[in-house]
Length: 315
Image (cartoon, rainbow, N blue to C red; front, side, top):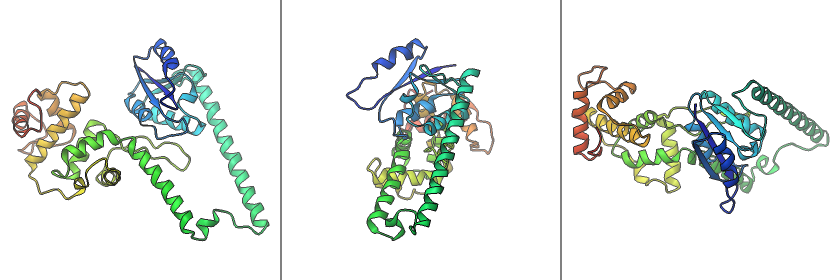
């Protein structure tokens, strides 16, 4: 089990130092620091902290307000952690999903959240009824009347929300696209990202709860790539069509992606490990087999090195 600390302050002018000592004292060997508003749910460092948690790990904060400003956001993060088999602990609050008492406290918070939503829903219904009784029509009059300014504001708000979601997963996606596009097809980039464990932007349900990480698909990657290109993170040429390629070329790209992912994670890219990566991707050998021999992997690795796709130090 690993304890992963998360420390947050709102601006660069503030310091996370008061949070670091208690987190280290609790046993956190790794602490991720973020400078962002607590009201912003699309925080890249928080998303990295969640993605870093594996089964049995625990995300630790000094106080609940360092993680979330709203109960719905807190429960959303905990749902994401529980989906990965990880826990959550707040040092200054009675919330610890690894203990019976902490889980009970979380259930109380969840019940309070449901009550709050029910009260808001009831007040909304009553407000709508009162408005109708007074001869008023509920909703935004600008949107209802098709006012261009109001419609632009709504579209801009939705666009900003999508952009923030994209930025939470941008780093590995930008690296893969810059390395592979447009020389290689989107399906190859998808396979490399999924092999490295890169997740898509979190999907939030109508209740505000997170849907958990999902693997990349071709269409989802293209939508994110278009957003990144429009914001200048990747060149527009990356969106162009890929030339027709042979299967052997695709294998070389997969080899380079597997090796790069292992090196980023600090793993040794041995021939056996690379072969296991190809098998995990259900990639067949040149002869149509399902098991990769070391000699077959070595042949591909040598060609990838000759083309500069893999550093000479690999394997």
